[in-house]
Length: 246
Image (cartoon, rainbow, N blue to C red; front, top):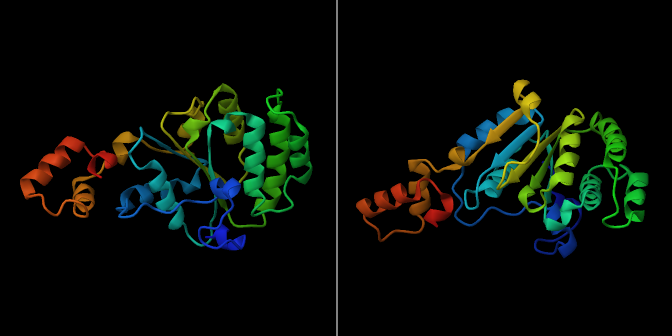
């Protein structure tokens, strides 16, 4: 898997602030691996969409980071962290294109110019623009490794217009591109066809709840003074909520 920070020549901690959301964050200190969930995600790489949805504190982004770190060498990975400003589809697509250009520098040069000339919040007919970009991306992917695109914290940018934009993207994904999305709320997408054709892999709140063994591993790092009865009580009260055990 390509290490983008090294590819761009940045030293650790020296990534420019405006670019940090293009780079995968590190795992939190003391993170307990979720191998059972990574195995499920790995099986979903043959589809189109890996969707991780749960409330705050269930470890969605950390799971995505762990999975990306363990991707086979024949996969590339680009990480795009979202914010409220990305609810504007023009800004989102500009950032999406910039992230893809880390692997394909010649991709969408004319399209990027059109986006930069557009006035912010001006109505944007994204379908034709995105269709052209995806056709061009398909040609690049035919000559490269498959690519996993991670959209982290989608709930921060989610809105009706961006939902339609992502729906269009998912409906027209080129071969060799898989999308992973983490979100606190389930996006308003029509996914029946993807589910029916087994192109969708979903990880939900129930899946993300820690098993007893995982809970014990987390507590073992922070609660050396607790006796067995207290540990079991804490595990029971937390109901597998990761944040509840830290």
